[in-house]
Length: 96
Image (cartoon, rainbow, N blue to C red; front, side, top):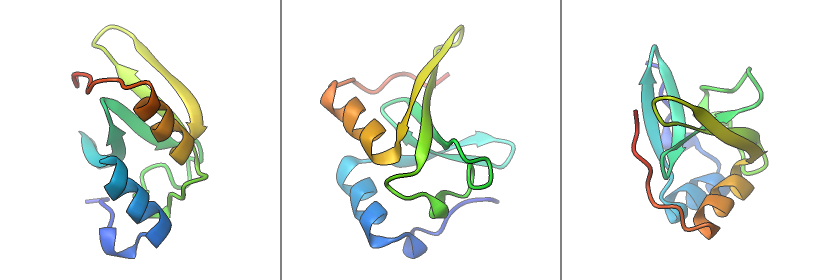
């Protein structure tokens, strides 16, 4: 299982994740993602994409949502993307 150990996260990102309510989602095939309001969050850096313990607040990420027919999303740093979704007051979207 390629899951991360919350105890080894840097304090800055650990506090941010806990404060914002970011969770972890398993999409199958050994792939773990950060998850926020229906969006899977993946690092743009393929080397750390599924190594969640290596993410930092300034990690460039893709925030993606799949509605069963179309995928849409955006690129932003981990912190700024989460804060954008929070600011837009998007309700939790359904996972397909």
